[in-house]
Image 1 (cartoon, rainbow, N blue to C red):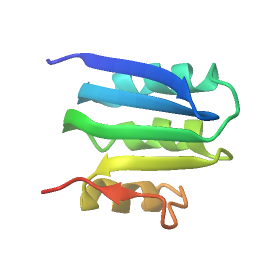
Image 2: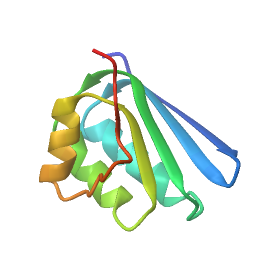
Image 3: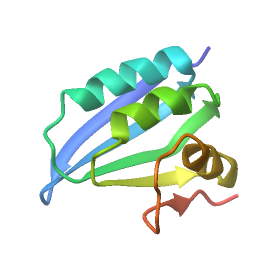
Length: 99
């Protein structure tokens, strides 16, 4: 297992969260806990460095992101679709990863 890296940076009135490595259900719970401790500022979550993305992770992340102003970047189409299935409205804020 690659493990998970979480980088958090505050700038320009928003919080940038960069994720890397393996994002499975267990790692997603860790991310969800970290997100819960962040200030309620606009949030950008960058998935572009995630090498392994297990669908079960999306449930925990969706719960942590609901009710926040969030932009998701670096997602593939499958992950975008899964976030929508789990009830997270992505609108036009999602930027797909280059494939």
